Image (cartoon, rainbow, N blue to C red; front, side, top):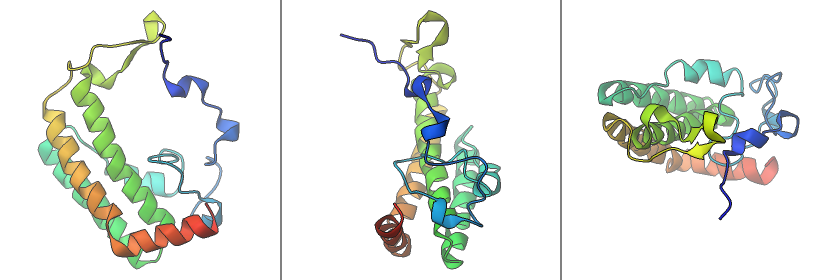
Length: 161
């Protein structure tokens, strides 16, 4: 069986749908929903606005972080700013996925860079991160199930991708 290496090793920024030099508030028509968390660490000004609140070190911090990001999600919806709402949803999702990775793997590292990206042992992470992941998961799902957001997302995908 062929060993699968991390997908980021073949990352080609030129072909990536999201660009660092675009202000997505000024040019929302250039934003694409994509899959999962794609674009979350690139799309400005949202990356800066939301990212500063994204934390999952422990349960208490995860509650504070997820509630703040969810409140930003609601603010973006109120302003009819779909890109902002979608980015906030992506940060909530990423709170879940990253906390789970830190729960599953010590230091959040899945691969050994010094050993041809050999997968590291699962189950070596921080048990506290499972609580953080659960908190973010609930807020992420709450955002995804918001009827206004769901309607805006479907409309966006139909019109722009």
